Image (tube, rainbow, N blue to C red; front, side, top):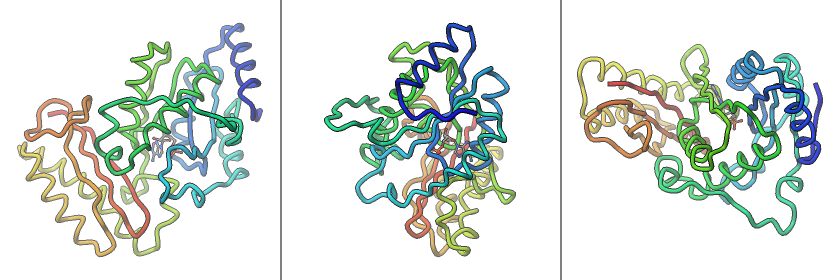
Amino acid sequence: MKIITTISKMQAFAAKARRQGKQIGFVPTMGYLHQGHASLLKKCKKENPICVLSIFVNPTQFGPNEDYRRYPRNKKHDEMLAKKEKVDIIFYPSVKEMYPSGYLTYVSVEKITNVLCGHSRPGHFRGVVTIVAKLMNAISPDILYLGQKDAQQVAVIKQMVSDLRWPTRVNVVPTVREKDGLALSSRNRYLSPEARRQAVSLYQSLCLAQKLIAKGERDSRAIIQQMTKMIKQNSLSKIDYISCVDAKTLLPVKRLKGDILIALAVFFGKTRLIDNILIST
Ligand code: AMP
């Protein structure tokens, strides 16, 4: 396993791999790796002779009152996990490398970035799209691996890749969960034991939605109401949003029809957790 820290070295490596006809798979992350990330890496390694993992806590996707500074970091642990998953390259740039002084260029996707998490976190997706574009420019991946856990991120990045006619395929990997259903997230470590116990209500409310739909419920308001009631039973929860949206346009739907994304964001104390399920009706 090799660690590369500069864009020029990463580009040179990718160009050489391409000359040798080796397909490159790429998994972008912010580090503090867990089994959710590992599942992306496993798929990437299985499908590509070269698996590149990037670790970069991207300042431009955090709002001024968000957790950029305290976002968990653990280089040693991440390197160990990457080695175990047989990653070929860790791309590990510094903030200066990605955003040198005088940096002025951003990439933004419109409309679908103003809803759901984009509504609560203005500027977040501008940062996400910019960094993914910059990482892709450094790595030139054939396949990009993203987690379903960040469903809106998947929709936004797919839109960018398609709009810019990038010759990269986007593969989406299912959400990996704890035994009780809580989606793995680097932010789970912020949770107090009590908040951790209560946080399982996110997944339980998604399961409830699934059950209601299986029984024939199609009214999104009724579904959201029941989910809200379930989550609010937990004293530490503060709901940011619960939405039923069209899986492609991310626009809210009144009656469920076709491919629907049920997505939510809930605070437990200062920790904001997200989760979602995809449903075909
Ligand atoms: P992050 O480091 O949180 O930016 O995540 C990097 C990638 O891992 C993103 O594509 C996430 O969607 C994905 N990911 C994070 N958590 C999970 C999970 N529990 N299951 C599957 N993928 C995940």
